[in-house]
Length: 323
Image (cartoon, rainbow, N blue to C red; front, side):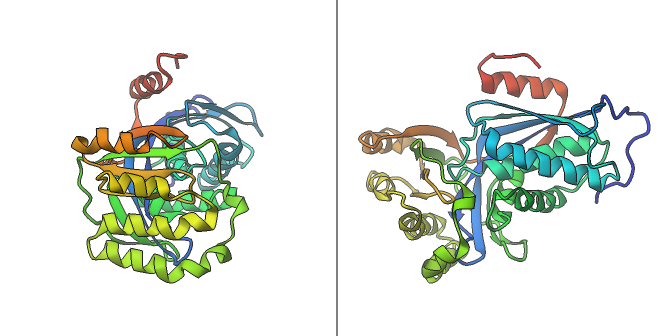
């Protein structure tokens, strides 16, 4: 549970917290049916949260290949205001937040969920407070809804980016249904174009025609066929948002374990064993777009020390600025 007091030996003007969460891909997109699923990947999102002596200022800095100031600014402010309110501090208290992301934004790789989790964990640390991980996930869903960066609260995405591994959820009730098994040695490849799909351009009613198909995919996942669920989910959603599903079909034909659109696109997520990588990459070579390669993640999000934050920050930025 969240503690009620700020540690008395810490100065608010100098209190700083550091944290890291990771990205994820879609098993089942919860927009159409309310039931969703996601699986964590190793792409990192770092946050540094500092309280300042400048009332009314929420200063934000966005670094890394996945930075997206338009989306993250709204989310940072929503997280900061909720943290300050929950701590009993004035909502216009000064806050300085730096984020460092290697998760491409607005492509369906769960950058918003990872951002909310990392910012909130760092903020709680800066405030000298503690919170159970699932409480942080719930708070993050509220912040994402306040910021307008999700249609559903994205509970499945938030759980996967906080805990790692694969999860199936009831997004409307914000409850975890099951933790399906996904091979831990899977490689994950994301293929996407420069197109970004903003959540505020989508509406839930647009997805009602595929409700039954998505529920069928969810049942496959419940029955243990996670690969089939990913593929069927992608086939259902891709035409609605105008994403080309032939990329996924090419990867499957080349021996991928599973492939399908992640989130509301435009990224296609492809999962495969290491031995199939060369053939899968060759099958996708003719398609235009950017490829990001990573792995399934089973590690939870965490608060970092200043030294750990500096290490990951430098690693993501390729030896760029120092903390």
